[in-house]
Amino acid sequence: MKRILYILIAAVTIGSLLFSCEPVEDRENFEAVTLTPADVKFSVAPNPENGNEILIKNEDPDVIAYWRYVDAAGTELGHSNKSSDKIIFPFPGTYTFYFTAFARGGSVQAATSKSVTVTTTDLSSITTDPKWAMLTNGATGKTWVLDMASPIGWGGLDFPGKTGDNWNWYPDYASNTWVMPNKDWGEMTFNLDAGYNVSVKQTAQATTSQTTKTGLFSFDIANNKMTLSNGPELLYGGDYYPDASSWTSIKVVELTETSLRLSVLRDQARNPNDGKAQIIFHYKPKP
Image 1 (cartoon, rainbow, N blue to C red):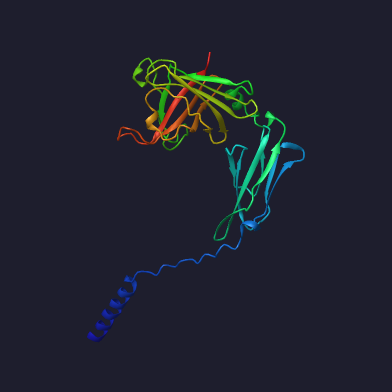
Image 2: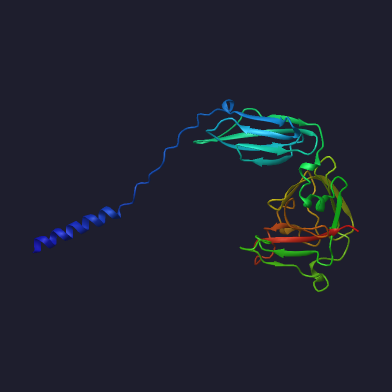
């Protein structure tokens, strides 16, 4: 009986030692990238039926495509990760496409880029969504100013979504004059006159002096995003500029004919108790 007991104790001890050993990590050996920049194959060409549409295609089915395209000034206009896609340029100009192939083991950028030249203006490709007219009034342009009845608000990172961090607060100015002085804070104009043009006239916080900067904007309607480039920043009022690290990466919270709400991310608030949130500015068409 004692012999059997000793055998059981020994078996348990050996088993516990076996299972207490740390497992050996099974690392996958990745293959080296054999594709070279010169071997990356892709095509970029105007649609024969519409010169404002550029057809792009990945010619290698064994890689995943990533496209980046810019205008003649080098301003980044967009990206695509589709194997084949149709990119629309409503305005004349030279546009350049850069292609990166993601293969097993890594990525390889094509040795050369490819450029195309668009010679005609065709706003019909982008103005089918009424939000373009609401924002810009087409080539004519539309100017927005802060709506001092309720010029600012705050919201959660997911607002105006239906789930997640979707709280918001739009204080009325009459009861909350502390939000900013009541004065002319400037104006912001969008137009589609041969380009995605934006001009921002900004009034200084402590004085009436104004500076005007003109540049370009992009408007991603599907994702409610807007980006300003080449100088302008979002028109704002009050002492909020230090609270956001970027005033060119913008979320479109609301857009109608008579009301526009755009936000920046409050990511460096001066109050340590303030977490990340949206600072939402409210605009109305200039009278």
